[in-house]
Amino acid sequence: MKKVLFASTALVMTAGVAAAEINVTGGASLGLMYNGTTTIVINEIDFNIVGSGETDGGVAFGASVDLDSAHQNSVTTQAAFGDPEVFISYNGLKLTVGNIDAAMDQGGLADIGYNGVGVDNIAEIDAQGSHDVRVDYAIADINVAVSVDSSNSDWSIGGNASFDAFTIALGFGETGGADQMRATLGYTAGAIGGKVFFADNSVTDAMGVEVSYTSGDVTVTGVYTDNGAADAFGIDVAYDIGGATVQGGVADVNGTTMADLGISFDF
Image (tube, rainbow, N blue to C red; front, side):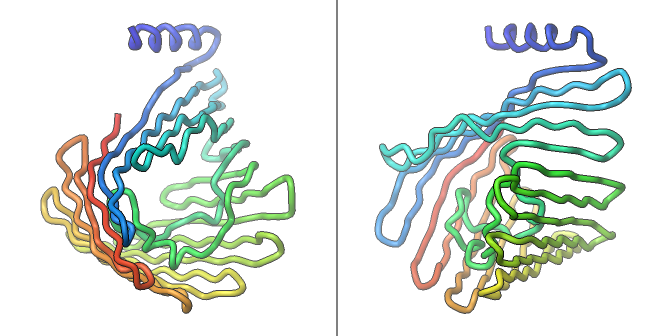
């Protein structure tokens, strides 16, 4: 019944347009998290509804909304229908309006665990939050973006690029009058990958290092972060079982032992 409904919707949307469709994608996860004192049962569900199309002149357009829900034990920690976005694009140039990631949100470090225990947060100290107008431009392996929050003077610019085995991501912005910066340099050589990360929010400097190794369907990742006032380190193991990933990690986050173990999958 659901498949018939989606197919019918896509058929109706196609009328009068070169190509148009509505897609529903999503993912879910479940597992256990230890927060230093208590073991918690957690689950999370995320569905993304995307409508897209293209005019006869080659201008692409679309919109999306998210359905999110999360629980810790019997307590609902998230139940939202939101993150609305509307976009138009042409020849690599894209304008998006809505609840959008700031343009400087580029690069960064992996978190430890399938749900994340917060190791990366120690280094990723920039707090841009969401913006509502963003312009992206992509050419070959280079992507640049600029975004603003139209309700205040916050702005952001960022970009990323890849050159052979190297990747680089840079972001700059201003939030509440405070300058922010972040930079990530990555390198991959066969089964081994590595990243170094730096951030500055006008008050604090932070850094992080990530190293990973992949053998078959198993990836082991280690991360260390430090912002002067706190540090964290941990190790993570992820096993790709085809359509789903079993993953777990253990970490010391500023003196507190954190861990999680669970499974996540996409629809």
